[in-house]
Amino acid sequence: MLGQSFMGTAPSAPIFVDLSWRPGVDRGSRPLWLWQKLSGEPPNRAPATRVCGLPIAVASLFLEGLQRTRCCKCARKGKAFEIVEVEGSGLGAVACKDFHPGELVLTEEPLCKFESSDASLRMVERKCANLPDDLRKKVLSLEDSFSFDTKTFRGILETNGMVCESGSDSDPKALFLEVSRFNHSCNANCDYSWRDRQNCMDIYAQTIIRAGEELCIPYIDLREPRQVRQQLLKENWRFRCRCEVCCLKDFSESDRRRLRLGELSALLYSSRTSGRTLRIAKKLLKLYNDEHISAQSYKLEACKFGYRASLDLNDNEIAPRFAQLGLKSAMICHGPEHEETQEWVDIMSMWD
Ligand SMILES: [Zn+2]
Ligand SMILES: [Zn+2]
Image (spheres, rainbow, N blue to C red):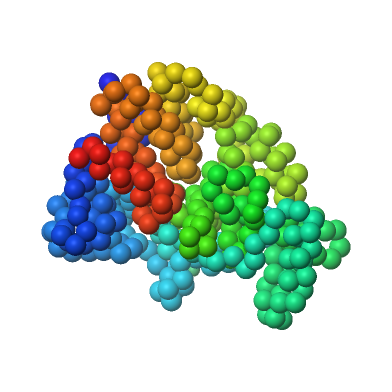
């Protein structure tokens, strides 16, 4: 039997939820209906107040302490964030309003896509050089970590290219004008998610974010000790990370946990028995909480393995808990419409 610690901050929602929504029969859209189910709120009670398009009772499941959505001037103009000078790291994205976990920060289509091969890079370089004036200037204003004197399109592409295929860790890459402005943090409060069919990158808040806080995404796998992270960032982006985790006076505990997280997550892929996989997945979920890692994608990975293993073991107690946590994590890192979230919706429906 698993304690509450496994689920992290204990949700007030019931562990088992009814997922019998039928399109065209039941009221509301599936995502909203789902949030209502997760929050334990009766689906047809009229919501009084709304936060980010969700009834407050529904949103409150993830708000955890958020009092009221505070808006600065830009937020009133409809801006969720602005690109401003951030102390010590050049330009960065700063929140103009409060965000709750799973809230969409930005959706952006790539300016261009490319592969790492020399031929592909050269073709895109030419394309960039022939862009209309204003666009070309915008591209040239992006960071170039590799050129010494004058910025080059090659340097800009290599600095800002983001992998845009799920399951791939190198190619193809895409260049974004706005997403490129988000700086790195080893405890990033946002994460990015690529939607293949719609050809766009989404950025979602992973935790509660207050207006005025910088919005950051992880550039690297965060499950590494400080020295490894610093080295990766230096090699690939030529900067020294000064995030709150890297600046901890005593980072030995954090290092120990992150090293362990890296080892354990690799073991998920090599484990040969379901019993072992299940133990590893539970240990990982506890460690992610202990280290206060905001990015939900890591938890999602552990849930995938944990769920499959608990099915193999016919453990009907643990399986729906993994299913629910997997669904919650998928909602927060990929949003309600993403294919991966839909897979978890289907999984949950089996525990009706
Ligand atoms: Zn603002
Ligand atoms: Zn850092």
